[in-house]
Image 1 (cartoon, rainbow, N blue to C red):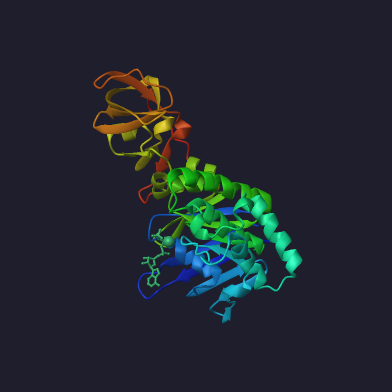
Image 2: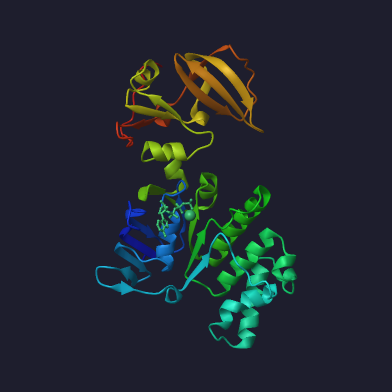
Length: 346
Ligand SMILES: Nc1ncnc2c1ncn2[C@@H]1O[C@H](COP(=O)(O)OP(=O)(O)OP(=O)(O)O)[C@@H](O)[C@H]1O
Ligand SMILES: [Mg+2]
């Protein structure tokens, strides 16, 4: 039984659909990242899951219970969905200590006091915030506050945790720390998590599966590996990967030599130097532990990235190649072509 099942879910606010017919299964124990550019409908999806928004059409089931189905008039309110929510602004009660903040959710459920204290202590221990139990939120750093917000959610033992860019207002170092924390929480609590982000790197490092969205439409669902190695279309190929994939027009000289699909993608890290076709080095850029080399191949430009310091200068001729199974071929609409391309050059 999937933890969450969305069937042909549409949300329209009057204009073009914010979410347009999304069908998606989140399996029990999944860490599912909803990934896509600003305005693609991620928050709208999460709000519908939470019950803060009703779907215009379609069906949402959580566990074996239908919680939203406009066609049959079913709608289960947010408080009855047994979900934990952490949004970007994770408001803690400023006049309550950390421990009291965490107790808050439990107290609403009228649990015996001794059991409540034990549960609060356990979750504080797991999130390494026991030492802050008696502090007030204003006496904590942003990352510590975020951990308290997570602890407050986890204390209620939600079946599903919904997170909307919960790390977006943290600095880079704290984000890394909190990502590791989230992974640990997921492994330890086995909670099903739906996590919204527009940061592809965050999605790649956290998710068991990623759902890529664009303009309210689902583009691809798969493991991080799948999405990176077999992007379903040119949008996904461009959205995932840093530095971004090289896209070559199949009608040009280079495109024809690479198998002649309408659009051909080459990841910078898949390009090898040393043998193959001729190119000229245009520039070499250090990026801290790795290097980017811009190549001119006829009229085309290709980015190559490497972990070893390249001994190259601008203007220098080089030879380059790419393994045929690393080429991504797309049709005129940008959809992935499955055939294995044949290289014309060796
Ligand atoms: N209450 C609303 N009324 C009208 N339009 C809305 C409403 N909420 C969202 N939208 C529109 O729906 C679309 C999707 O918005 P949503 O907030 O889901 O995007 P998002 O993917 O979360 O973006 P971001 O990454 O910027 O948070 C946008 O075009 C937005 O303007
Ligand atoms: Mg959003």
